[in-house]
Image 1 (cartoon, rainbow, N blue to C red):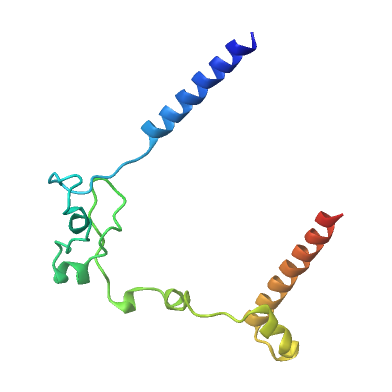
Image 2: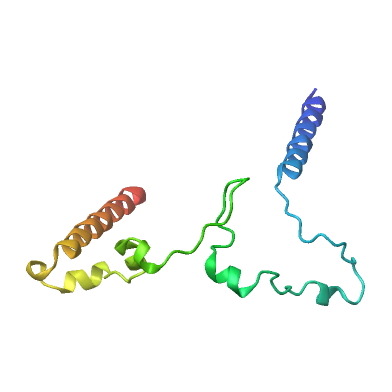
Length: 133
């Protein structure tokens, strides 16, 4: 009886594995057939030059289209984008640097960030203390 259960479990596991293989999304690498194996394999794996012209690359956002029938969006002048967009990658001050400064001299944004990071650090510390017990 135990052997029957083991065989049925093996069948289920094989079915799940087959489903994972079938369910994986694959992408076509090129339209032409490439040679498999052989001595020229390393050269065939090298990246190919892009077929898009520099003009198209500088005027459109290539690969940003998510719609089936849509087209890639055009690049707009900088004045068309909101101001906050240009500050997304600015470095922010760390909690240790904010602790060194006088709390009364912090700007509103820095004070808000200090409170947020300080609360997060306290929560993490309390969680680690509780986890050890």
